[in-house]
Each structure stands twice: as C-alpha cells, then as structure tokens.
Image (tube, rainbow, N blue to C red):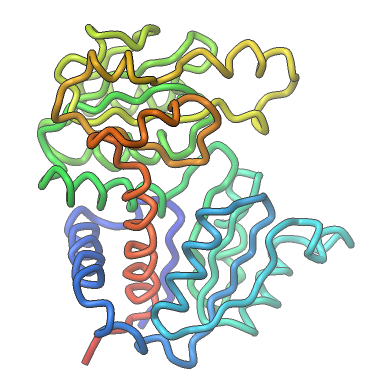
Length: 308
C-alpha cells in the first residue's frame, strides 16, 4: 500500500471521512474486536510542544489496539536542542516505528517531516494552522450526538484567529450541505482572512459578531467554545485583555436552545464555568472519549489494517 500521511482533514474525501467515522463508531461498540490488531506495531509520538489530551489519546489509542508507544513530550527532550532538523529527527524515528504523530509550534513542520519519513505521519497540531485529528474528533462527536454532519448551524466562540481547531473544523464542515457559521470573537481575534475568503468562495453562510448573547445563540445546533491561547500572544498585556472576553456560565446557558451542544477542544481556562459541566448539553468530556476512537480508526486506516 502506498505511504499515506494526514496533514489536513481535507486530505480525506467526504466518503473516506465517513468511512473513518463509521470505523470509529464500530470500535466504540466492539472494543474487544480491535484489541490486538496492532500487535507488534509501534507508534512514535513526537511532541515539540506541550500536550496532554492529544498525546495521551494517541498513546491510549495505540495501546487499545495492542501496539506500543515511544517518543518525547517536549522539544527539550529531543535532539532539537543540539540543532537537529525536524527532517533528520523524522528520518531517525521512522526507523524505530511504524507510524508517527507529530505536534510542532511551526506551521508546516509535520509536512516537512512527512517528506522524509519512512512511515505514515499524522499532524497532531502545527502552530495556529491545522489540527486534523481534533477535527475528526469534533465531527465524530457531532455525528454521534446529533445524528448528522449536514444542515447544522454552528457557533464558534473565542480565539478564532490562532485557534487551529477552528480553522480545521470550518474547512471540513464546509464540505457538507446546509452548514452555516456564527463567528463570535473580539475584533482582534477574528478568523484569518484566508478562512473567511474560502467560506465566501464556497457560498457558505456566516456572520461575525462580538457578543455571546441570546440573539447570537438563537438557533444554534452547536456552540464550539475555545480558550484564548496565551502561548500564541506576543505580549502579556494583549493576552490579559482578551482572556476573559467570553465566559459561558449558567446564566448564559439559560438563554441557549435546549438542543444545543457545547463542544470545546480543551484545555479550558475559565471560558466555561465549572457549573456548566453538569448541564446535559455539555458534551466536551464525551468529546475526549470520542477522540480515542477516532485516533484508533486513523491508525488502522493509515497502516492499512482490517479486522479479519
């Protein structure tokens, strides 16, 4: 089978994406069936940037499939500190593993690594650019809980400028019929122009607003909250000014539709109050579990493995 990588959720067609989500749902319902399909296989996790959920969910996914894991969790733990390039790191690590998940603060770094790799490479987040496995997780969560990925009105709130999860999700869902977006952010954190232009070119309905209020939430099927990312700001003053711009609490939830789901790629800081966790519309912890199933399905797909 030809070597295949995943740099963007658009690397998969809609049909391939639906097949991957179908596989993830089957894994969810038949865990034992897949418990040994990766026996003897090794996943390398190369995380040049801190991560909890993504790194551990990749590791959990591989171990759930019977495989093993090696890797590092920060650039300080790699030979990058000695001046080794990403390409050379990937050449070396692909000699030790069967598949690799890479996170890097520089946009395009996983793509550069994939060009020299002997094994499939998964982009686990590159700067403020893409986060395809989070997008697949979001899509599985929405499809599993809403029953569809089309004809949805989706509110995206918070840091829409640096939020790679937001960029990937907009690109992916824009391929489905009847999708519209409400982009909720302060002026300084609006979605980049290229994302806005892409939606306009495809005639995807969207509106940009600053307030998270009853009028904004009316008719939403999904409210996707994001944190203001301190690590993406160049100075502390701008971060402090922006970080508490939106806080979703019980009072705001009383204004939201009863059928609306709340998603969040996590980690949260204070943009969702803890009191919201018990609201039946809060789906962000279920989202975490769906992330393991998606990554299990993706590892199998890129390795060309099927249950016999």
